[in-house]
Image 1 (cartoon, helix red, strand yellow):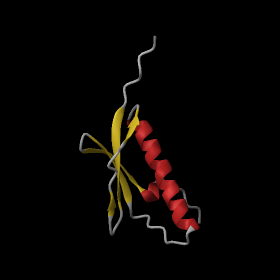
Image 2 (image 1 turned 90 degrees about the horizontal axis):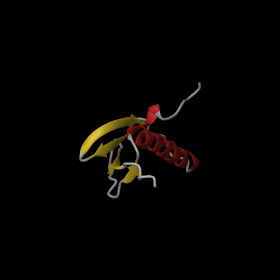
Image 3 (image 1 turned 30 degrees about the horizontal axis):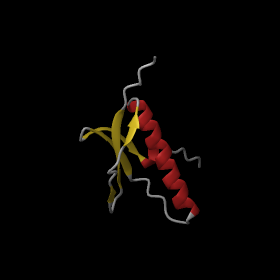
Image 4 (image 1 turned 90 degrees about the vertical axis):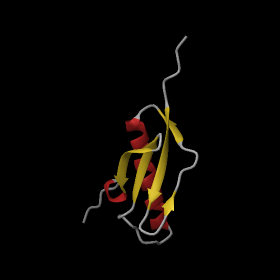
Length: 85
C-alpha cells in the first residue's frame, strides 16, 4: 500500500499598493515549487479578470507564500506574465 505524499499548507497573501488580501485557509502542496506554480496561475487569473473588467493592471503588486508564518517565496505580478511591446 502506498503512503500518502507529505504535504504542507501554504498561505498566499496578496499585497497591493493600497490593500492586502489575506489567505485564511491556505492550500496543500507537495513542495514549494508546486506552491509557486499555483501562485503564478492565480496571479495570471487575477490580472486576466482585471483586464476583462477594463481595470488598470497594477504590476507593482506581489503575492507571498507563507509556511508556518514565514514568507518562503514572493512573486511580483510583473514576473508572472510576459509583455511583448
